[in-house]
Length: 102
Image (cartoon, rainbow, N blue to C red; front, side, top):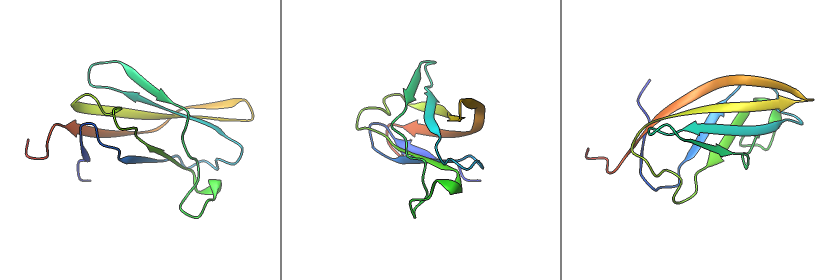
């Protein structure tokens, strides 16, 4: 699998496949930054390209200044369905760089 790299302070979209039917789910993604702090987002979309939550995909588009640290980031999806939390749904990792030449 190729390493995913994004430029600092851009607005890419991260997609996490959970393998869970997300109908009626409450969703959150916690992004662990390289410096150790966490960016928690709840404004995530739990639908596929056709608008169906059954595909189990969580999508989040970063805001302009959210990718503010270079280095490796880790993402963990937190899914709650009918008050039952699913912890550590498959994580995603990616690297943020100042420029693609580095």
